[in-house]
Image 1 (cartoon, rainbow, N blue to C red):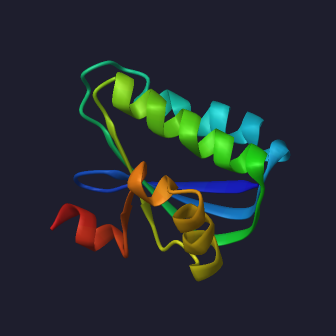
Image 2: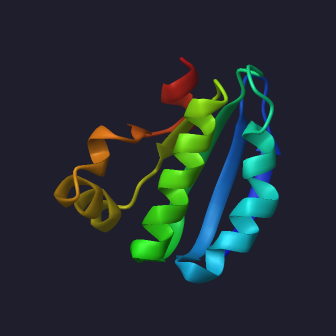
Length: 110
């Protein structure tokens, strides 16, 4: 799992590439969780999933923990550019009701 971070005016864009599975945990813990660690910082983290090639239950767990971390610290996580196959997984598991999902980062901040 590779994560590329880009600071924008009103948010941080994190582009994920590779497999979102058990091997992704350390990378997400080191690069993404610190961005939403400050309580009340009102940080917007936009997660671009277009580069994800694989997702398993461990990867879903990582995303759920990241979203819960953002929610409990008063920050915001939005998933964008979700591949159709992943959107189907989110729909079947009803996680599309848990995650905030948008088509593009521009749609989130407009």
